[in-house]
Length: 389
Ligand SMILES: [Zn+2]
Ligand SMILES: [Zn+2]
Image (cartoon, rainbow, N blue to C red; front, side, top):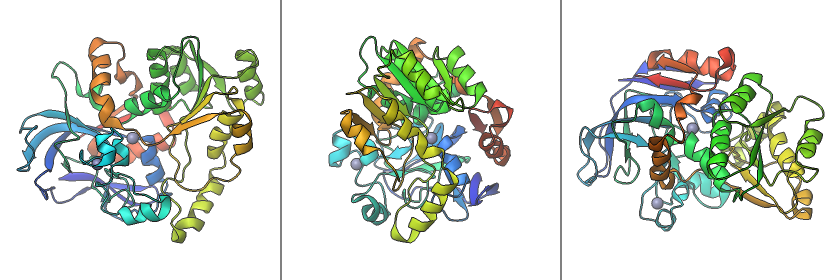
């Protein structure tokens, strides 16, 4: 089959690789009909995620048709059309039982790595380094899905692939970030980053009852999208006085909650052997940790800072004093995608959101290398690239 393979920094190639096969009775094989490049794939593209190996298949946002199931998968049958959540969850452990799917104890065969780094293991993620389990991703013609009796979610034929694809990640990720803000009527929410997740944050915050959303970015086309599609007010952080403007817009009090949908380009760093490399990466990305510092600085007293943006290791100059002094609450983490599939599918089916607004580029899978390049360089006002095998 054809698959998008990582080789090195800024070097991804579409190659012929062996088809996946059932390895475990709870596996399924999915024939991919649509997949997407995620902002967090760019961290892999930039070579800042340790434990990638040449030839690793990328992609954690994908959907398709079930073509084979293992003997213990009874809820799916050949021909079913499914979307697949990006975190892999066993369904049985303490965390899965408590709907904390991205904290699953059993889905990461390289648990020792994150135990060393974080104290406990994190869940496996498709196509996202050996630290996250070393699973082949779904930017391919076929993918093996472990724990297929738990993850894959059947979608109705009345909705197109493009309408449901983003249930795999960015829609639930934006939604959980907004939900973490415990929005009450009249609230103003500020979001750093108007990329794909930021755009879904805006939509979700309004769905959850926010009075106003203020989007902060530097890319004018993204701010325009936030305004026109999302109904957000916007600020460009390259304007020197934008922090002051944010206070002015909220009567000097500050937003009720601030969301960092930017993150840090250093996901999964911190094992001793990789620490220096992580620090090096941080130096090259000085604008990234800035988002969370600004969010803390801007947030009103007693407010919430919600972080869907990816962080991996250690953060320098984290203003804990400001957070303590103002009595802020922090909420963060990888999305528990599984718990949002049904409610968000209903929003799509009812027409309260049409996730296709985010797609700016449609390409065949064979042109994935070009897709990564233009997403990385934000060329052609690129917000979201979908790839069709
Ligand atoms: Zn993603
Ligand atoms: Zn589990």
